[in-house]
Image 1 (tube, helix red, strand yellow):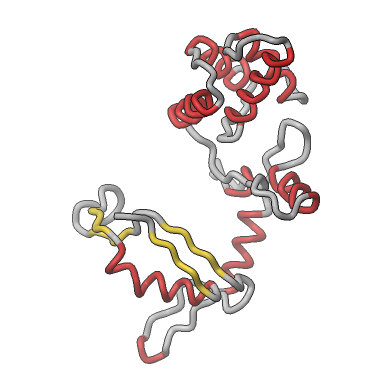
Image 2 (image 1 turned 90 degrees about the vertical axis):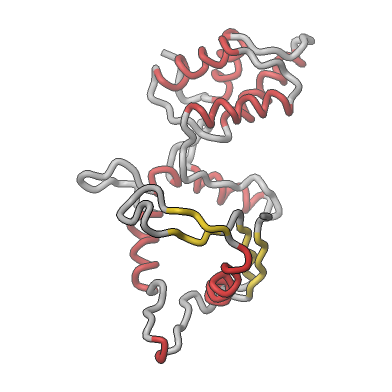
Length: 221
């Protein structure tokens, strides 16, 4: 199956179109974890991209009263969610994570992810770099991203240098993994090598040089 592309006028329009099209564009997935595991299944899009022309208009789908089905959400819930979980990074009791913890995560060069995205959009409105990451990759995914970035930059992957990076620049000082870090660090390594007229390569020493430039507010332990 291929990813499903949808163009809609409003969020409500997109919601109705997604419900309408799911039977012809989805696959059946047996629930493997949770209350209904192995007893029920869900219909799932294999991939989804939605373009909404007017996202600030008609946000809540209006369900015909005769159907007896409640709307999927309410404006009060959306407003509460925005204030409490997207804009407030303070954790409640027993909470270990919320989206705001990532949205307002400090960036290496100062500011938060959200502040950096706002600044980029003000300076370059058509940029595609204004990204806010709401989830941190685990080590396995981080490794794959790092490996892919090495291939893109034509720089040989060095396992010892990668392990050194994880230990000295993440684990030792509690820094969280972010998907953008491998790209930026490898680009910095390549720039250092080109400046020194050397063949781009990875080593603990070059990792330190790049990380010191990138993570300007902290130092390896």
